[in-house]
Length: 336
Image 1 (spheres, rainbow, N blue to C red):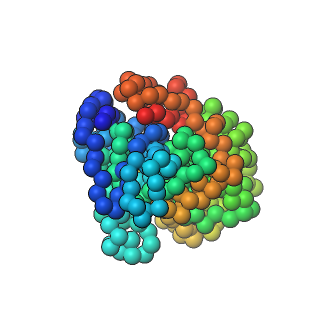
Image 2: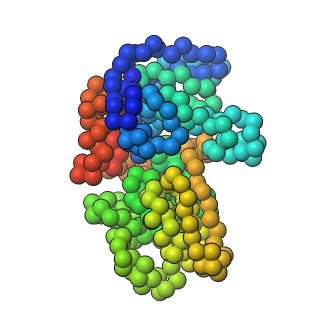
Image 3: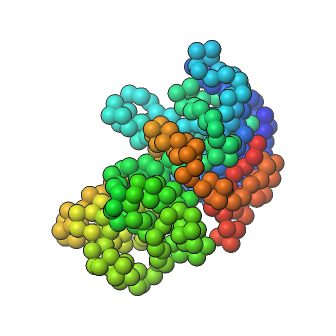
């Protein structure tokens, strides 16, 4: 089978590999669509902290069942998406029902080879039926589920003021599901095209550009009360630290993005607000199922989110182009 391999930072190559053999308790999936994630761009750029090379990237996966156990509930040809966070099932996080932050987690396309290949065999528990979704929609479930998980981590409620800082695909997913929960959502985003998309397609009330006047603008927009809940989806240390200052008293800060190294905040300001601080990692099966239902119900503008496509044969040449801001990419999908 063909597979796209990131051999080292900045080096992509299409190669032939052995088709995986399905083990008992696994489903062999013929991969048909792979969404390209910020993680993949970081792997290509050499800035992903949890990875060794070479690596077959790809964890936003949609396909069709090729082989499965008779009692799996799947038959050949079923359309599926894949939960790419393989958990140990035994550690303290797994025992608490949080396999998304398993101590020994193995994320497809990061810790082990992923889905930029024509076939992938995964444990049955990580395969979800995707009837009623197109292949493109099924390939977008994973990044949308990360946004939905962050919204649930923040215990987002109707009527709250929510601020999403950073409107890449994950930030857009956060804005979408926070709005779907009934929150009044604003967004901070430096790219005018993405800010416009948030206002026109995602139910965002107002957008702001980053800059020295941002805090004053946010204060004026909220009568100096700021936001009940703030989500950071920038992956930028300076932005993450500034976000503490955008919180209302009694507010909640959810860090969706990750940076290498430490971030800091002013402890007196943190305490006088009685701030709740949460990390949000990956997503759960419940998040995937909720996203699939939302797509089926027409509450997710998947056609608008999906902006770029390319076949696997062209991916090695096109993926570096998609990293450029001028390309206008929101969600790019590789077709197998």
